[in-house]
Image (cartoon, rainbow, N blue to C red; front, side, top):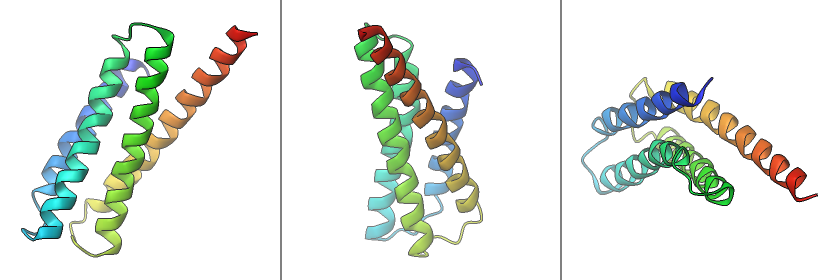
Length: 122
């Protein structure tokens, strides 16, 4: 998967999360979790997109680590929604799967970046 395709995929994830959050109950928990989830999912796409405008290798690595943290946080909130039965929306499993896949992609990309950076330092 190339950078443009991954940018599209992270943007779609954010849009899907927004749609999903519109189905959450209008309760204090529903509002707060929706807010947290929308924020973290939006940060995934925005920060990944920002990696292409990095000012340095260090800046790129920093932004990539933020992406990994934010997709992991999104995954966390999706699990909370499912396990607390806050939503019975059938899309929850698909969103969790997408969060898993994106986490794996960004974890791998972070590992590759770290290895490449260490190799340059030698």
